[in-house]
View 1 (tube, rainbow, N blue to C red):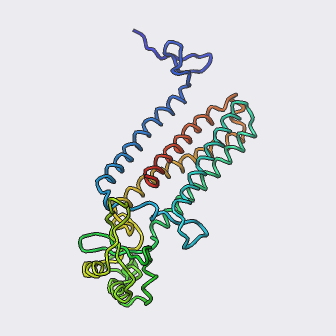
View 2 (cartoon, rainbow, N blue to C red):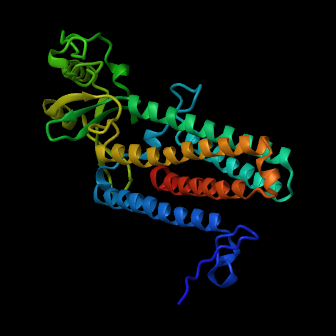
View 3 (cartoon, helix red, strand yellow):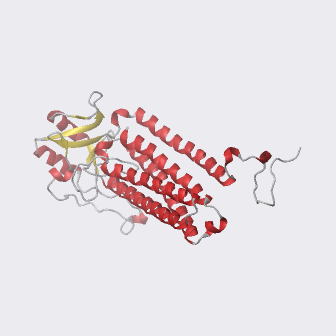
Length: 327
């Protein structure tokens, strides 16, 4: 039996298969769809792992409304999810401009394709920059917390609202430890950054202010809020404090369970990598449009193919947004 794939020297096509293209799509579009399906399975695995882990540690999982509260220019204002919602809106708008670019390509309107591609690139850059800003705030932290000997996170509240360490510690650092870096450490050893306040300062300031209470990382199953201890219970927790935690990294997380930070960095970082890749590809396609490459070819299929990838990236963000920020 002969091979089912043939090359037609007249139209340069490499698809045989009995003379019919699957779903009427070109070879390039089919390969893009294969990639999208495989990548969708990868993201599905990551999000499934996140969901199962969250379900396992549901009683100590951070509350998104208390983690993602920053908004540029509104320092100190509690704006839960506002900036993340804005980021999502920007990415959705970029999908709209990409659709318009593809439609303009079908009509062979070079200038419109170029302008809509340019707008898509700008919106993509804004989104990636916003994601980097969100990372910075997540890493630096909002309030600060303490870690106990049994690796639990304790936060501080006053009048029912969480307060930052700086709000009730009004003294400078008292310990004289030297932060070892590559410049002053032995054999180039380097330790993590020392927190702004010492454990002794936290304990002393807490005892001096009777209005302060401790909030645990455990959730009340009825109110879905973190449990606030009484003053007596809070004072009983002080001897267990071993470290001050400010911000989040792959080992510690002032907002609660450190696994939340691991998943946040990995999944949002993986998605951000896809967005950056899409921006770079869009830039290449944009210059090809400006140079008239696709006008000479007689079609804008490359714009359509990169559009499929860009819509996929936007759709994935909808799921990431839902899992991390809404649920």
